Amino acid sequence: MLSIGLPVYNGEKSIEKSINSLLNQTFTDFELIISDNASNDNTEKICREYAKKDSRIKYYRQDKNIGFIKNYEYVLKQSEKKYFMFTSDHDIKEKTFIEKNIQVLESDPNTVGSISEIDFYGNEKELKIRYRGKGNYKIKEKYRFVHPAKGSFQDKFVFYLNFMESSMLYGIFRRKELQNCIGFHHQPWDLMVILRILEYGDLHVIDEILLHRFVGGLSSKDIYKNLRGEKFSRIELLFMFAPFFRYVINQFGFGFFIKNFKIMIKLCIRGHGRIILDNFRKMRDLF
Image 1: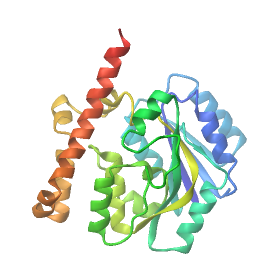
Image 2: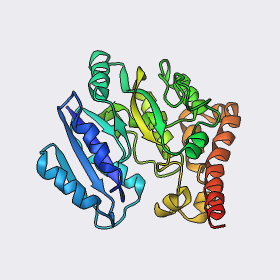
Image 3: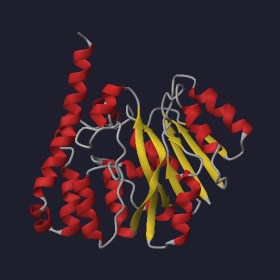
Image 4: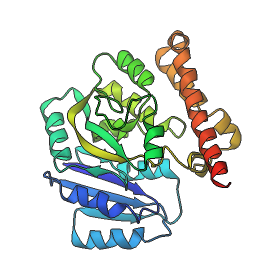
């Protein structure tokens, strides 16, 4: 019923805990598709050992690093199940995460994606950065990183555009609809998947924390290196949001773009700001 896609690169330190949290789920009707992006650590050895022990695990190793976006797309393309879920090598799920989200999707055909509330773990410095503008990371608050969405496509689009969070990507989705939303190889690629899937239905959030995400993941470090790994030129990185702006104009019209121009610029500044901050922190660590 469910395919779980786990794209990974050099995940030897964390992938065992992530896989174990999946194998310990109360819901067992799933396959785990692992795509190893040419890791040069012990990731391959660990994954092959798991695959030998559990027939639900399918391990693929890329001959060369294909970039993180294409690696995400690869695991989705291997799936033929009714539902699909992305997971990372750092994600830890409570035992009922899959079961409760599948129940939501099975009971409501208007819901295209479901996730639980989430929190982040990692060192305190990184946590403070991740929770900046979201309140104290030690205090539980609803809908800080994921949010339900109902209504018209345009209303949901505007809401998530302003919400500016893409952790919903790690929920469970109807696979066919999700496959229609990949293929955008520009920034913000992860948020873009969420924005596009809103056309196919509503998003649901279970009111309990069942997913724990690592604060030092792909979106918060080595950003420039990862984007350059996608073969983006420096000019493309300078104007990396231009394809997204074109999509918005084509989808909703120039008037909609102008009406929401401030949030478009805010998104652009935030994206470039993360790259600048990432490089600044690396320079600081050298001294």
